Length: 260
Image (tube, rainbow, N blue to C red):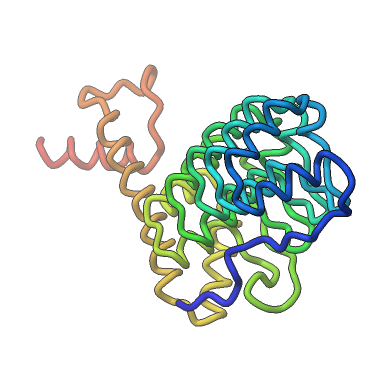
């Protein structure tokens, strides 16, 4: 499937006359050594300052895919600054997930607040997980799934018409990129109705291969559940001590009658 959206969050230039601008421009220019010197000189409070468009130096370093600078900033910045959203609602985690920066996401997630990890952007109502799944980064998806709330995993897009139009979950993007293991994880953790709504969206768009992939993940759960039930059935069934559903009880009784 072709993708029509660039893999870059648009950066708006800030007004030039403060330390933040100096640092941001150094990052954008690719002057890594000079940038590291500035980070060493500036205080944690300065590193957490925002441009007029709400971005910290960490946002910019993530967008420009500068792993070394991201790591250096994360270690020195104040914890609260890691949660900052820019004027479009993007956290640095959104940017890192979009760019496939696994090591940065791994550093950021445990240092960020739960609210920030689950945050949605303003334009499309997408979490960092949406962007990681959209760009096809399974390892980042797995990290985020293990760290996000169940409610956040069910988040649907609310954007205008187009690629990110309303009604798409992270599961949709995982299926879009054929991320089977991510689909398996999401189906186990998401609300049942949210999963079925995702299948409906796929079917309405004629994306039957995607809906089949999601259904296959659902079938795996049913198979696992069946195996677990069989493993826990006691051959010498005692109705006073072992809780069993009526259907299973009927099956046991039928088996017993057939051996008489």
